[in-house]
Image 1 (cartoon, helix red, strand yellow):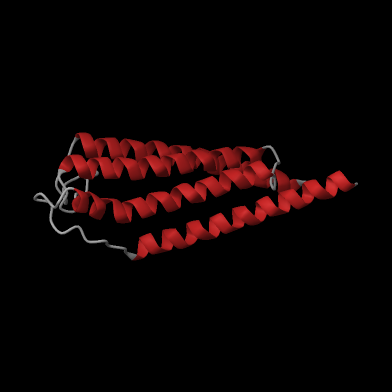
Image 2 (cartoon, rainbow, N blue to C red):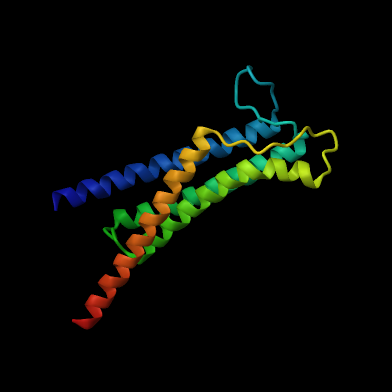
Length: 167
């Protein structure tokens, strides 16, 4: 049982780190929206990508809101791990939601700015190209793997419940 204690302690510490990251992410987003600065100066700044400030701030806030929702689901899953519910259906659902929110956030960060430009008729907004960099691709790949692992955990939890109902 010593390894179970280590897993639970690690889950507790990881959950605390996730909470800290979520607070810092929210604070940095608020600071970048409330106190806009130019690139190169100190502090977080809002990358507008040829969008008016209000639209860029809205797109950034939406993406961060999706990430925050995902981090909340991750914290819920880690809390279950702390309580030794390692392979429960609930833990699988929370992991799946975490991955889904990360995928949604990444997709919205990629496609929302060009959609804003397109639906506003490019009123002084630039060209609105879809850009995907390596970090976006990697985040989509890792999130998709998390989503698959969560699906597999959910199937395993169902099989376990079925085997207990037979016995």
